[in-house]
Length: 282
Image (cartoon, rainbow, N blue to C red; front, side):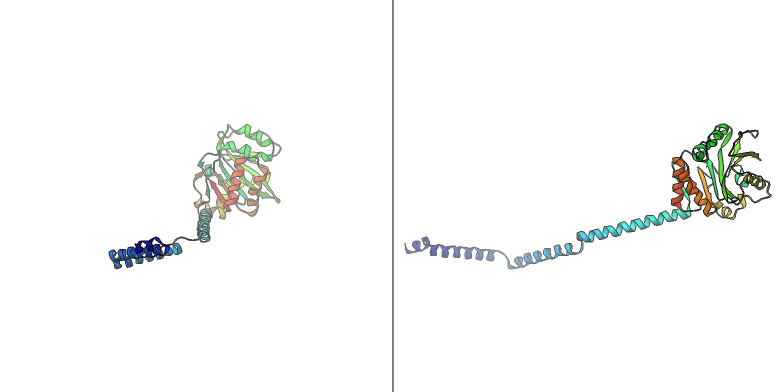
């Protein structure tokens, strides 16, 4: 009865609980192999160390990740710029969605009509572009276009030449019949030369064209800059643009302001970006 009273008291309860816990742990220790305990502890340490190493070396911080992404972006950007620069130098070919048609360049050996000392030279495959591209020259361009549009081949060339300190536009077209009469104009001189209809804003240039065709004056076919690059020019395309002087390049860029044609503006913008002395539009 005395033992029961001790258990019922607070001190007895405490002693009883302590003995119970001690008995439980002793039972666990007796049942569990100490070697297994050591293995479990070891595994726990390895897992902890593994998580630390993963966090330390394979999961970058936000700042580190930003740096990596920035470096990759800069590398891709530099690579793209390098490819664009390479394309500028190697091909000089630009694909543009314009209404011009694909056709052969230098049809009818047109460069043999062109004086060798021009500033800017262009070839077009599509006569429909003549009026909208060059209407900045005045209302007579529209009248001229209407008078000859059904009487000339689609291919034509245009160039700027400097005479007496001024630049003058000239157009070389090829009529379907050589008896073509384009009409009389205040701002244009016109004449049939060989197979070509020549229309120029300067009489001296027209005379030089006749001399170039006759071989008494060098033509564009003998221009050293043209000769050095003509083998890199495709045999066909929609348009060819060639500059032979700073004045020619400036005149080409000035077309952005002068022309009302969005197509020609698109072409000249591409030429400015290319930053070369010639361009082929495909």
